[in-house]
Length: 334
View (tube, rainbow, N blue to C red):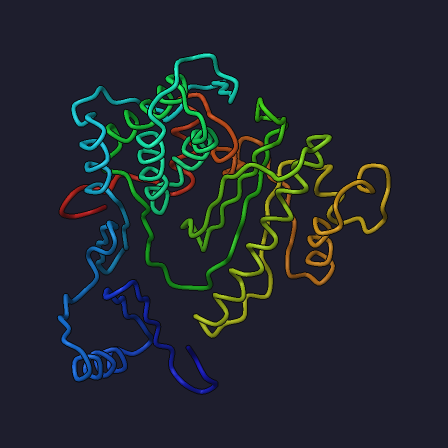
């Protein structure tokens, strides 16, 4: 909403709920006064709750969580008194559309999974497990429902978790991580990609989804994931440029596969890349134009790993901390 030489005022609208922010408090007050003249409105003050997302702000940090919404899900499913779990999905769990277990009510299954998907706005630690159970909405069975209930048990034990954003001065850097498993889906052998971006030390964007084609190697799967991350990184960089009035010259993308890194920097088509769809070579243009800088990261520090597979408990807890999902106590989040 910015014109050259003017201050920024951003208004988020959902039906009759508005979030207003900007560079100058006088601009915000002026806009609210104009709205009050045109409509019957109420000013609720500093943002604290919006569409199920609880917000707490002070001079040091901003926190987001959905504990009240999560409790409603547990109550709806009759699991408010269930035993909590420390991980959302058992390591190496394999689900299949060809399950021979008895079917469950489709409407109920879809309702629960849909509710869990809304939790992903503040819970990137749930992205992979919820994405996995979302693949079986057509014909869910008791085996799939058991996996959903395991996620609900994890939600029960982590109601006080959310995203924490520390307020820090200085230049903010946009850093992304991309990763992929290989042929993780038991039905069509497609891989799952994961990507997450950080502004400074805070995660601001994440995704875990099944790739749309079958990768022939781990290099190809990682390369496709890196291209998806490059697209997201370029868009985030342009968005931040508009919002902060400061050009983001370069986005750092960290990958743990050396072959994929080499492929993204090599403009020569060879046996490893000649079969890959042309659209996935967009990352090469980003690297050549220096919009994206590719860096290698060791597997132990690959933060997108939590978005591509179910991890063992200790590894999961470590990665959850690294992606910025932390304890947010009620009343005064920390």
